[in-house]
Image 1 (cartoon, protein in one colour):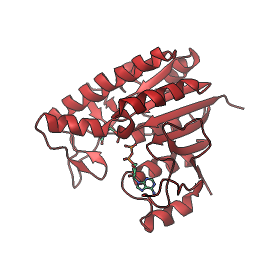
Image 2 (image 1 turned 90 degrees about the vertical axis):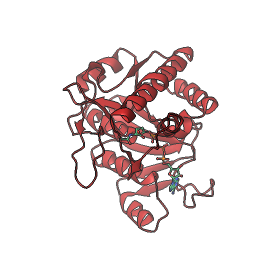
Image 3 (image 1 turned 180 degrees about the horizontal axis):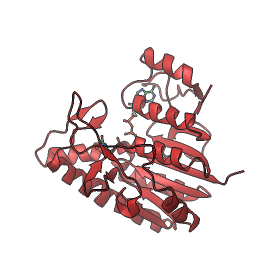
Length: 260
Ligand SMILES: Nc1ncnc2c1ncn2[C@@H]1O[C@H](COP(=O)(O)OP(=O)(O)O)[C@@H](O)[C@H]1O
Ligand SMILES: CC(=O)N[C@@H](CCC(=O)OP(=O)(O)O)C(=O)O
């Protein structure tokens, strides 16, 4: 049986609130075994763009990223956020290593082709995006890789890449080598039957139920691309996908996704 690997993804809502971020990182430090952390930070990046006089533009959950926006999000994701997360993990006794996709050629993306919309410097991740030998080496030396939402194209161009997708693609790439659990952590206890009722967590969702809940509008907004990525990971052989509260990763309340 393969050894375990847990991949955690945290989003902008947690990154933005320092007290919550520190609590999550302390909980993460308690999780035994091999771990990877992927962080977004879209909410804070949008605020930073506004502070600098630019209006953030999102289309279907992806940021339109022109050259000036890429500079700002790179500073925010790969700089301030990634380094602060790593420093906090070090303080919690975890040897974390901060990475963009360019570092060690860890994740190589392709610029999203222009169809109806030009997303600018946004990266999509092909199936072979992940440098699997590098990740295995890092994990086997006991390091905790911490990925931000910046990748590269291998020709010198940095690309802004959705963090939910990075987590899913890492999970898929490493699934042949480890028994991978993918944990999407955010500010609610799981997928809710009523988004305004925090107690309405759905404990299990199959792929077919997901399609029904999506069609009924019960699952909407940012949860849709998250669950699309999550079910893609299950299909690709990831053992377990969980949607849970970032402050309660060591507690049983959560949504577990099932293939059927
Ligand atoms: N059924 C649902 N259950 C939980 N959250 C939902 C649901 N439908 C829509 N959402 C929304 O999806 C959001 C999570 O997606 P997103 O904001 O993209 O997360 P993150 O920034 O952590 O990646 C929640 O904060 C919530 O507002
Ligand atoms: C291309 C694209 O949309 N990139 C995302 C990357 C950050 C992210 O995914 O952050 P959350 O997980 O907090 O949403 C963005 O700039 O918002």
